[in-house]
Length: 405
Image 1 (cartoon, rainbow, N blue to C red):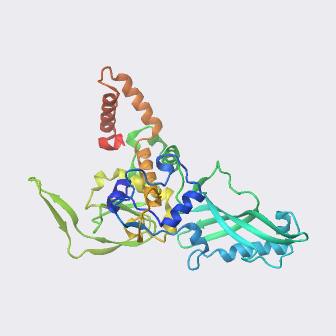
Image 2: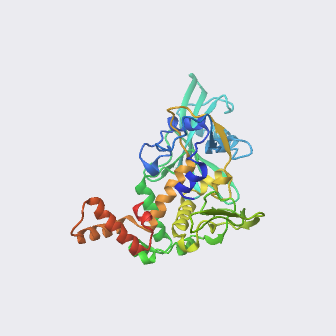
Image 3: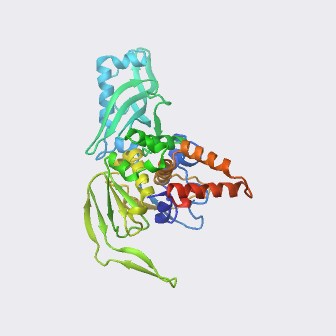
């Protein structure tokens, strides 16, 4: 699902639970860079001030998942690590004085928050900030530090291993990408493009970076372990494609608009849709909206989701990236308040990555330069780039609107 499809599905991009969003933007210091690096809803897509209530996604943050019973439930594991460190004497070494506590419990340890850093598609570092109140020979002393954890979402389970207690964050900020509280990475546009383009290299298709004829979306998906099928998705609400990370179900049946020559339209919709099972690692192309012949962008869009956003959907306990399945609640929007939306955030990244796969930046810049040098006369720069864009669209067999984007 693209950024535009997501917007249509919701009328306008929704926002997460307001108290969480405000805490996140204040506490975590959301980056202010434009486009893919910020999860703030852009101007022009904010909730209508005249509406008393708006519908928003009801999402689970990774911090809540880690501590809540019935979810990750890692609270006991964090305290157990601290108590093992207490008994072994390691805690005294780390804090720099002899700790006399008999046990480390909630009274002695406050879990202040957490920062997340991406390792790979399924794994991340979690630096849990702790505030300890410890008994010493000189009376009570406080100490602030981090429980550094290595976390992984597998197909069946979530694991969290506490690796170290330290007074400094564990990760190298230049080596790893920061994740937001819903495990969506903070990427600049350039970083999204770099990661997307490297998919061609990683999966044995490096020639695609310089040869447009080698940019085979279906082959890339296959090498990534993804299967592509076509189904008429029923009740699709504008969704062109869905990626299934795990086995799941969808309803199928005719649900399309038939346009007549006289300008009239007819909504053809099956009365009794069929429910079918979709295997894991499958991209479903919605034939009620598009055909496989025109699904190249959508396939690449889902490949980017598969690479970048698997952990978000695992966190939300979703088997696919069908946002129609995300729970929603109603809130009253506050005038002048900034809202963030992790789902809208991901769609921007997947769109940007799909364009980077279709038109790798290095080769595209070279093509633009070469085309520009051959244009002798043009009315203005806009006319020049319009001509260049039309030529590239023809050469790459892409719709012009894709090239413009």
